[in-house]
Length: 272
Ligand SMILES: [Zn+2]
Image (cartoon, rainbow, N blue to C red; front, side, top):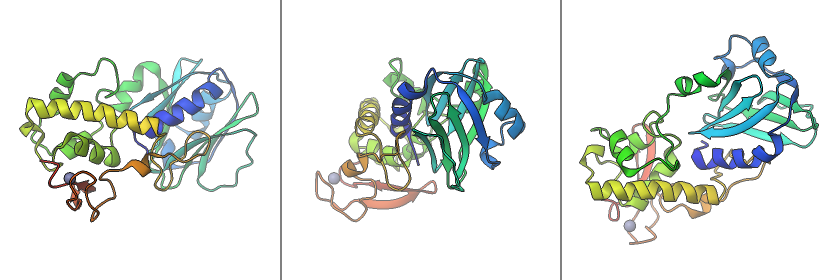
């Protein structure tokens, strides 16, 4: 599932190529990913002949600002992919649901095998209300004190880190790696963290996410960047998907268990 580093990578790749371009043709294949729009026809009308004036990321969502004053929001869900092809696509791929042909002849397309993504257009002023997300962890204004506020809960730290309403952009992979980097056991109640641990966690969040961006994201199955290439962060995992292997720091066996319905990997000796 794409998390903050993957979506940031796609955004960076696409920005320079699509900002300033006009969408001259829109093709939509009806699917549940469009359910937030009143209809496919209304979505097409809101996109066709509109110029893309900016591209931003918010959590795991991409926000394409349009010259109409509205925003095309794309949440990638589990398996969503956005790709730019250098020529118009005559697409027979059954997993492609939206193709926007741009005025330079390139085509932007949205593909989603499991269809858990969301694609909709909303006025700029309504974006935050639609997304309901917590703060951006890499934002300049995001401080350790904000983290302390959002994590003031008896719930497990692993579960809270993945809760998009608490903090935006972190999912299963990066939460495992962040908790390892911070030396914190994923089963701990967030409220039990000392202020020292909270500071370590704050720095680990920023470090691991920045590292993920620097490695252009993680590709396990589906993730491809804006030009169809895989990421490299999967070669740098320290705990994720390393259950049964030895810890790179202390040689203890990495454990794998289920937490809140998700897999969770950690070193029982490095993470207290
Ligand atoms: Zn260890």
